Length: 323
Image (cartoon, rainbow, N blue to C red; front, side, top):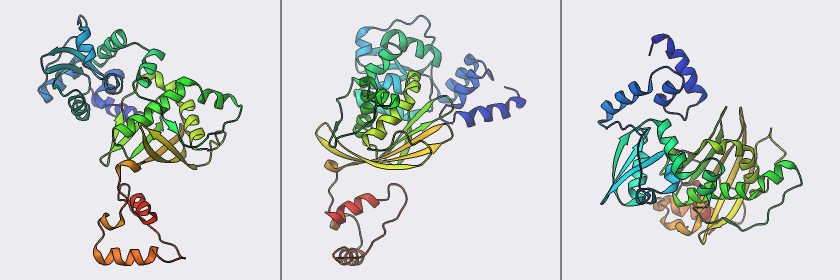
């Protein structure tokens, strides 16, 4: 890669911040794929595998969780006893390998391969387009809304109420609940849609099939309908709430819609009430602070401001106080 290409690479990164640098280098022609893979393999001590003539057994395919195939772009190659050999295109995504090992209970032997070849094999063995998205959303159960929703007769509202879109949004919400995420960020970019879950305080990018991009407007409109917001309003921020039940657990979701450069961004805060004990005495306050706070919330009138950064416990404190 020439020094003169660095500004162009920086511009490419700015337009697609969720994409790994090495993928952008290959895609934009700054470097040859085989050269980049060789450097990454040397850096991470991994083997590079050519997938052009690979045959994968049905037993191996069954061992791979479908959600990780599409979201993390991982292709199972071989299963031998308790070890699963998997091809990955992004060795920096350590969360993917940890998630795969936790989900399958197998020892993971990761090898490096061309992202294009991995995507090709995924299409061959797991489907493509609408079938891929449908397979993803059918892996989980539906979300049960605890409040009735209302929608007008506009074309956008009809599109947001289609079964495929409803299932897709349900999958996003259900996956976040199962991953014990505290927040979901849905961010439109110039030519893609980025979804991130905040897990253990860290935002983690979720890999999605490119076909999901065409559902962008419908996904956001569906979330607006669920939160009882105005789907026609696109230039003003909106706030709402979703009350739902997932696998028998009641979940409260705070929804914020924010206009952005390439569309509307969505931030959802999830509160799984079944997993939390709202006991003010056990929330971690010092005895003097607890006594003062308890005296304040017992008063019949007044206002209390609860402030702090993301994940500091503001909502838990308020729920405990109300309890």
